[in-house]
Structures are given as structure tokens and as C-alpha cells.
Length: 112
Image 1: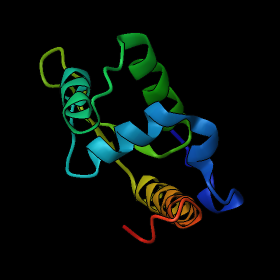
Image 2: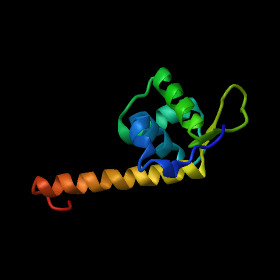
Image 3: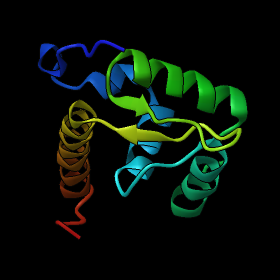
């Protein structure tokens, strides 16, 4: 799929949704197929993505050029994060960190 310019939006993942962030975070340490993504995401976040949510988000991320499908392994279709996906994930995580830090300060929690 053709990659969109990630720079055209401050935070492209804000529009893509939480599932997209979880998927990119999972793929950040290497390619995975659908079932492996579901298991990894549940392990690090406690969120159980259903197949419809997972594959809808994978389709959006692919259309945005943030992930790429790799050649099939049997019936499994692994995905990998692209350079644009890494950039988008970093930008999104930086924005979340700023919000988290502000919230903690305003709650009187300091930078815990």
C-alpha cells in the first residue's frame, strides 16, 4: 500500500484508535501474525482484542502505510511495522507522556 505522509498530522494515531496503538506497540519488537498480536497485546496491556477489531485496525494501519504485510507462513499472515509506523508511534507516545505528566502534576502526584 502507498504510504501517506505521517507529517501531515501531528498525531495520526489519535484518529486511528487505541487498537492501532496497541498493535504498533506489539509490532515494535518484531513481526507477528494475528493470533500472536492478540496474545502479546493481552499480555502487556490486559486488553483482549477481538478478531473484528484486530483485523479492522490492521487494515487501517496498512492503508496508512504504518504496517506492511509480510509473505504468508502457511495460513498465517505476519505484519511488520514500517518506518512511518515507528515515527507515528513515537509521536503518539510522546503526546501521551506529556498528557500523563500534566495530569500527574495537576493531581499533586509529581512526576511519579
